[in-house]
Amino acid sequence: MNRKKVSGKNRIQMVVLILSLASLFALVGIQVAWTIRAAKMQENQFNHSVMMAINRTVDKLALNRMLCEQINNCLMQDNPGSCAMMMQNMDVWDNIKALIQEDLNYYGIDLDFEFDIIRADNREVQSPGKEIYLSESLEDLLEKSGYKLSIRFPGRRDFIIAQMGSIFVISIVLLVIVTLSSLLIYRFYKREREFSGNIIDFVNSMTHAFKTPLTNISLANSMIARDGTVKDNTKLQSYTGVIKAEHKKLKQRIERLMKTSFSETDQTSFHELIDIKALVGEVAGSFSVQVNELGGSLRVSGPDTAAYVYGNPDLFYIALANIVDNSIKYSAEKPAVDIAVKSKKEKIIITVDDKGKGVPKEHLDDIFERYFRYPAEGSADTEGFGLGLYQVRNIITKMGGSVNATLPDSGGLRINIELPAVTEK
Image 1 (cartoon, one colour):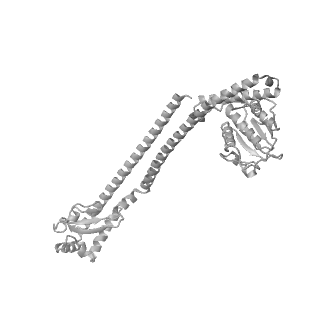
Image 2 (cartoon, rainbow, N blue to C red):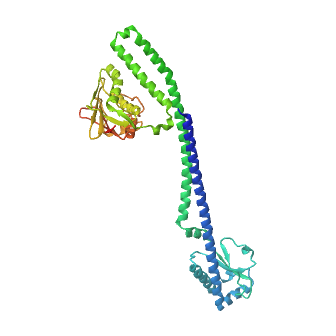
Image 3 (spheres, rainbow, N blue to C red):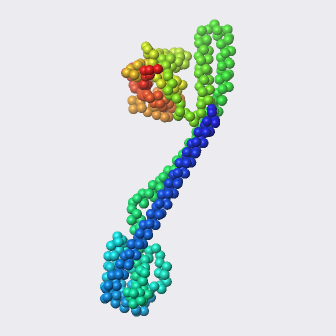
């Protein structure tokens, strides 16, 4: 396994992830800054409009002599610095309110408000809050009495947010969603990296653990093959030949697995030329001893001419072996498996038939799902983990083909594989 290459790729992935997260958080920061700035600009615009409305109101009050006299009489009396307590029930107070409402509407402010005419030295308004607005002075209007017009907006904050529109609210919601999504993505990435690392360690441990048993199997088989009794027995010679061939295949696959980084599984090449006839024969040969011991049969038919497809030979071998293994496993006491290969309109069609109990029609698609297992009749449980046909579908799909299951009239189950044929080599 090329650890330097894997380490380099991991570093690149981490750098890309960090840059992506940094860019995202920078974008979030810019958006937040823009939102705050837009809110301040809207607030300043609101304040400016209110002051313009107040000045307009004061100018109108100055032109109404009768109204000025009534306000002046109120202010000249002894009161706690507020004219509202004495004039709220008088028509003049309603006239002033209507005048203020008209001027606020003129500047596009349709908001509930409270107003008063107060002494300039009133402690409560010497430092007005964000919701209170004071005119510059009413001294010239009210005989230099030192009073000011005060307006308060209880719903000022809501009004400013409403003026910013739904874009403001949507921006805030999107910022929250994007931030949470980024954190979740990073969390999932860390979990996936940890999981991948555990798988790599497991594969490395298993491949190294297989080396010694394989060596012992090869040594024991060689010693058995040298025995005179075995040399004189054709059947025993065939058995030792099968052991030797299967040992060689298993050793090659383990060596390839050790040389290949598990993190690069998605980059497995599916562009190698595969001789279908030779590979199908190889798969059938690997199961011949098992079928013969059970007293069954395994037949291969076609094609008459050479047939080739593009894919990964090792993975395609595993896919076909999974199908044949299932056919034997779910067959009766004496399995009968037929493998047929046909060429049809630039397609290679491979069918694997067995004479087993089959599966109910409603489960024909389910058998290709991960972890799905349909128990054989009379069996309380089924061997395996429900991954064989799921693996078959993934491999065939990556080779540009398709796979499905049907129920032939002769009984049992039929697995159909369709692959694009290679017309030019």
